[in-house]
Amino acid sequence: FEVEFNAEAKAGVDVSADFEFEVEAILDRVNGTHEFTSKSTKLTHWEEFKFHESSSPLKLSVSFIPMLTLLPIPGLPVTLEPTLKSEINFGGQSVDVKVNRDGTDVEHEEN
Image (cartoon, rainbow, N blue to C red; front, side):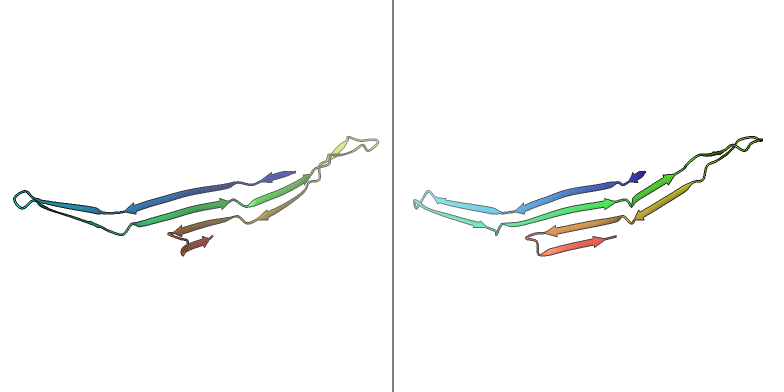
């Protein structure tokens, strides 16, 4: 009795964020006045989750090999080895899943 199977999975995450901040200070020493301004951009971020899974076909096989010896009298012994072998294969598959941002952009591919 034999069983063969192989599976593999990989996962990855990519994350990035952008934010800009600017400060300007003006000091007038003559008039004694000052002015401060600041600007910033909206925080933008991006996340991506990748998952890849693949499996080979599942293979089940069973072998039955009896040994039969015939002893004719008179004569030489005769040995027979009839073989019975059965095999079942289930197909393998490959799956790729990619999720961006808040889960709204989804890619899913099966092979």
